[in-house]
Length: 156
Ligand SMILES: O=C(CO)[C@H](O)[C@H](O)COP(=O)(O)O
Image 1 (tube, rainbow, N blue to C red):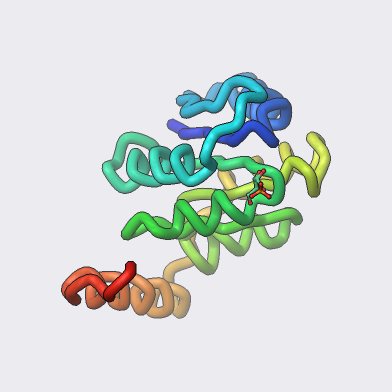
Image 2: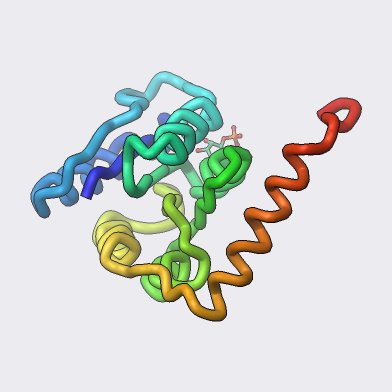
């Protein structure tokens, strides 16, 4: 699979471990940074990865920050992206099967490396169920399309 990965400075070490894990499995991994402890704005990384995915350049994304929350919030601002923070394997699986999420986000200050690897594995090996879930995911897309057609709200 072709996977985009990105992190902020809080999660560089965990990103390196997850990236190596994915490469060892034969995945193609494109690294959007950051690469060291110098502070960055996590939305810059999240949005770059999310845009690359909606443009069809990568099949899945893995985003890491301190909690996984900022990365999820930011990535979900990109129209068409469903990013899910998951800190357990069941949620990672449901993020794919129920929500058709393209991106999983992880918190390097919340979970350890072994759990992170298991979460990413489960996310990547799970497929969208469609069926009853498709209607719900379509409702999210419908809302996004309707919002895009509206004039921008003051201050937004
Ligand atoms: O976890 C994060 C965002 O969700 C980031 O890693 C970040 O370090 C949080 O930093 P701050 O508290 O300074 O906004």
